[in-house]
Image 1: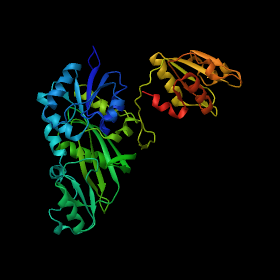
Image 2 (image 1 turned 30 degrees about the vertical axis):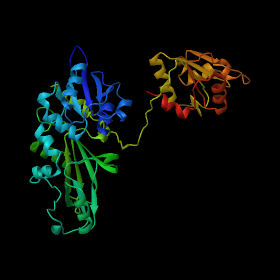
Image 3 (image 1 turned 90 degrees about the vertical axis):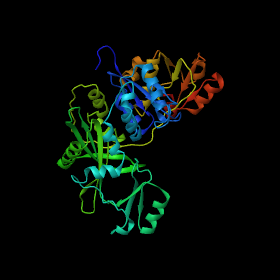
Image 4 (image 1 turned 135 degrees about the vertical axis):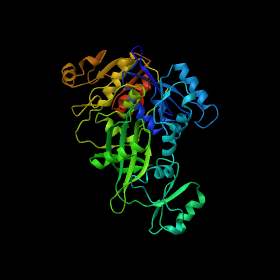
Length: 427
């Protein structure tokens, strides 16, 4: 990495599922200063990326490259990381006009991979690809699968059980491919190819549950066949950095290619948590650094679900928080509550512990290893009101008791929160 400063990496569009995984992969690395940009103001990236810009033209709209270059020059961006298939294609097409390098594979590879038909034509002589039907009269076995030639995330896909049903969909959507239906298990194989065209990493995972085309439940699988197929694809396509391919078993169990994508996959987080950060490796490789991988061998599965981030207009310099059934529940530490308090430490916010704890507070905090977290500890008697001990108007109050929250809110007029609402305070 550059010795004088961190490498500045811009992710676009940062609010896509790929952009969110890129944030998780790169935001904590000490070598990187991360930036995010989007064309739409409503996206999850704006809640994550500290250095964030929206309102850029869509990638195919006039002026997008000029707008990106303005952003790149303003922030002295070193690398641009595309976070969508169509964006990867367009950025590769305009690499010569861009003011920084684009992380990813070259234009011809992106062009082939953006078309399922072109992908199958390129690889059909070296590996099993789905049978494509040029006409429904040639279908010998139903159901068949319909999918867009250019698409991702299972958008526009259909299973048709008859000629009439298939024709119904084909008449209403251009660019659909009619292909054999593959009923077996499905796999994604995450890969990394360095600048010398060496396949440095191959990691297969089974797609156990899929929602909107995203593998939300996945686990690693072993097999020399996955590395063999990765080598075949790598020899035929000019790939660089992170990429993946998807396979599905046919009726007889033969692994059949579904697609190749020269980009990050959202569920690559599985291998990242085994020690192989494919996005970070791609940044290093794009800057012509030598890379290697070290993988842990413990058992791991990933299951993904929606997470929430919040944006509020709250402003406060003091936090008053309860101890029992709030910071400590059944003798266990509320991890989110403590994370919030350390967030307050980072922001210079004063933390007041306000409790009627039945016992020695200092000993309890010592056992929980929380003793040094508070600026002051207010230990009340059972008949004292907590609201009487709150002396700041630029404050918030956190307590599990509705009665306490109601009293503080009515008497002090400050925002009050139950432990389950601490999530809206996290930034």
